Length: 249
Image (tube, rainbow, N blue to C red; front, side, top):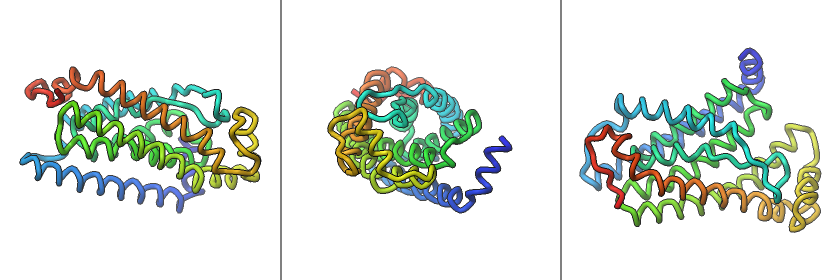
């Protein structure tokens, strides 16, 4: 804990900007949720005691899943696959995008408390932003009309946004940030991709993210979506207290 606080103090500007990103995404998600409630003729608070309890439990589950990472043969070892978005997408389908963003934050916070940070918060910001790129569009689309067809459309859209955003985010921000953090040339990171993926070209960050990052995000979004579509319907009444019929067909 002391080391984590020391790291945070040493990068206070970065940590504050991290919180600004969290607040902005939460407010965007909340605005969409309120709009969906208005269009659907629904009333009531976004957060209730029951919702907060479910959010806490599923956020803890998500943070545990985040610890189990799977290496992929087409990407260098610092890219690994995890399924921590499954509990978050399930709850976001039940309660809306704002709880989803909150869960992404809680997941990161719990991970920091359990493992600390080895990337001076760069990796945590990336995980939060990329996770939200799946959760927000998928849950926003689903919140406007909750049926099976819309759930499928929402998952496809979320996966596509995750793939495009995650790929661009790595090229524009994450890889340069890691290169600066570890004081190594960007070409060295690209070279690590060349060692495991023949599609990566020397010094070409575009070929790196297209060949290594895009497939990873596509696999993750597809897997998370499939699991959610399979188990959301039976879980929905339980999440909502058993007094409301799941709206997915």
